[in-house]
Image (cartoon, rainbow, N blue to C red):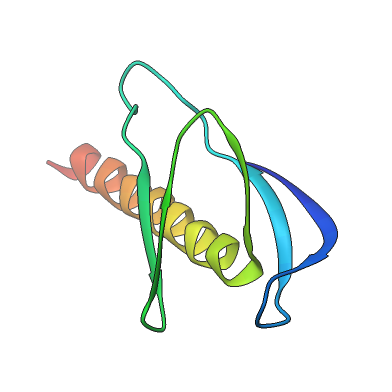
Length: 79
């Protein structure tokens, strides 16, 4: 995920960040993010501005996926 900090803020005073989620043959669908009763549907392959909290959620999701893949890989070797 490409990110770029901006000086812009939304109506709630949150700092906005420009992001671009990669588009691939396997992953074409937009990504749904929900933070504290607010939702975003982020299209892949387009640069959009979102609050920093959305970037944080996406980072946590990516880290969780990497940890899951490491765990599976380690346990496949044991089997």
